[in-house]
Image (tube, rainbow, N blue to C red; front, side):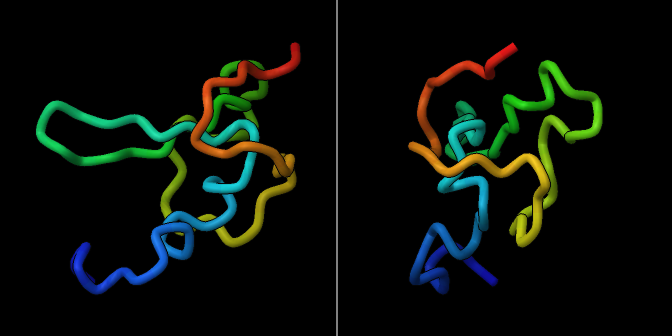
Length: 72
């Protein structure tokens, strides 16, 4: 699937887009990777999970893609 075919960007990302620990990490070449900030304090979570994330026990609704830091 190409970027042009994705009608809802959140659907391509999954839960990370709405999680307070999800952070969009753009690259110099224009790609965007989603980083899980919960992984900084909890080894059960992958720093860059494969997308789309459909299930996650660490999901915490909030402003996804933001700059909040995990509670430690």
